[in-house]
Image (cartoon, rainbow, N blue to C red; front, side):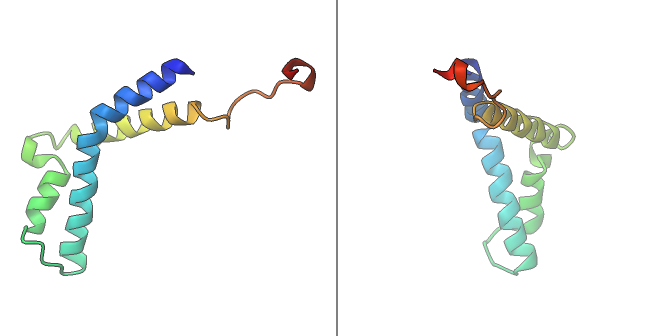
Length: 93
């Protein structure tokens, strides 16, 4: 349990910036494209950042984001008691 917290914390720190960039540029691109909001930034630039194209990582960026989120999901769920084995009453006391 403790090791999962350590891994979860480390993953969260590493993934905070890329996931925040993906989240914010996705929302902003939707506002600009679908709702015609004027944010002063072109939708194509926002989508370029969102997909990682601006960093030259368009092939690997979505995969890394997805694997990172999967890691956070697995470590986060493992820390809950959702999948804990239920012990018989006699062992709990």
